[in-house]
Length: 92
Image (cartoon, rainbow, N blue to C red; front, side):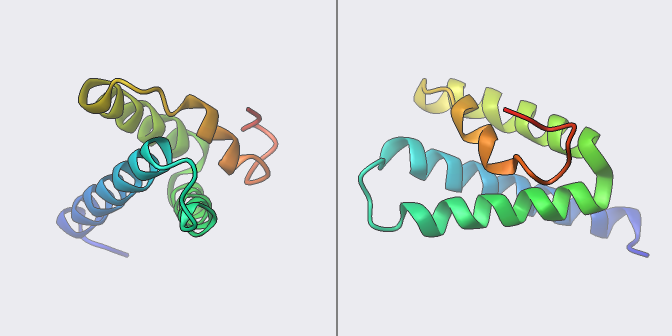
């Protein structure tokens, strides 16, 4: 089991990566890298869900969504659907 500091550090790294990926997808909808970025977003969702369940998905998306809206004034909510299928509870 990870120590608290290691878990917090890993959560921060995943949050930053998710922020970067979602921002990229919103700002570059025609990019040839889009599918690769979306695949990684799905993988991160799987990691979050396996570590903390649906609460982790909800909490991470809430925080990242607010940061993106503040930083680039775009709403990443449509990309929540990339986590559909991880659990029946998550359906967007």
